Amino acid sequence: MVSRTEIEHRLSRVPDPEVPALSVLDLGIVREIRPTEAGCEIDLTPTYTGCPATERIERDVREALEELVGIGNVRISTVLDPPWTTDWISEEGRRKLEDYGIAPPPRRSGDKRSLLGLHQPLACPKCRSTHTERISAFGSTACKALHRCLDCAEPFEAFKCI
Amino acid sequence: MKWDTCDPSVQYLLHLGDDALVLGHRLSEWCGHGPILEEDIALSNLALDLVGLARQYYQLAAQRISGGCTEDHLAYWRSDREFLNHVLVEQPNGDFADTMARQFFFDAFHVLQLDALQHSSDAELAAIARKALKEATYHAQHSADWVVRLGDGTEESHRRMSAALARHLPFVEELFTAAAVDRVAFERGWGPDVASLRASWLELVGEVVAKAALSLPVVAPKLLRGKQGIHSESLGFLLAEMQSLPRAYPDATW
Image 1: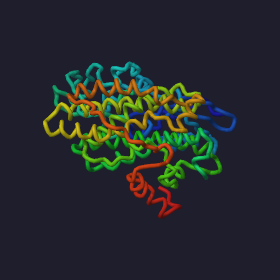
Image 2: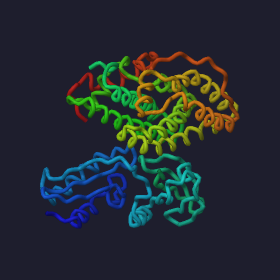
Image 3: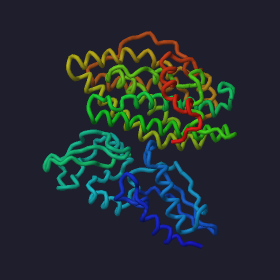
Image 4: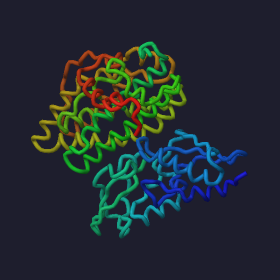
């Protein structure tokens, strides 16, 4: 039987198709990993309802794990509840996002103020200044918003906080 | 299959899904036509969220219908008389103020509706609602921002926003008028008593409208029966376009 560690190791190399700096594990969308006699069962949770990458992620996870346990032996279920929040992005994931040039979401997304964009200004991933502003609530993908740094003048993307 | 006599939980899911799909499709018509690039992207994002939400409702409905029914079947092979959305969401885009007025009125309702659906006795429906509520709140913030920006903007933007609110307000009463599909849902604990959402809606909308230096005009509500499948002429045109590909090429995959 395949071990959980092997599965995790393999999943840590499956990137999010829209933010390839993050693995599906960093993103916090792998809800459960259950090694079974026949192969393994994985519970995934979608990030944003309309995210077109959801099906691609499922396919990528399946293909990666089938290399480990054989074709047809990976069972993937989608779990909606409790809903994913940006708080589930790992510390490692937050660091990788920033290195990639995307400001990580503010913590504690359950706080209504962050939902309404009233949180503390985000730090610019280039120069770390917090003298930044939001340009648009929506960005190039379902998960991002557009911001700009008022000190270094660089525009940057930030993870939408939900 | 007769949609008006099918399982009531399926009907309710279709009603919820149809609102999301029809409004999502309307918003997608803005793609490439937005007044500014950021807004073009925003409208497409809203569309994506709503179509994604429609898919979740339809997938659940299709499971319950069984017999090989799929989400695509529900979206593409029903005629306008089989759609159970509110007449508000099918209204044409008009100018940008019209789109935002329609969006704002719906978003304010949607947030209240999803908030209630979180506690649905239908666990699968509650799970969808808990997820969608966060996105709907984000949408509401966006459309409210635009109502304020246009209402409290130039003379021209104020005039247009004011006209857009007046044009869409007569469609609002239907949101709070229970049809058979709502009554069954309320009796079984699946969804809210829609009339009970009216006061909170008025409070939410009133606050934003006041901030926008606008007011809600007194209008005679239209008598509407979208939830019984009786629609304005706009829906037929929308569906004709949306459904054209699968109807012309029934085996097409993409």
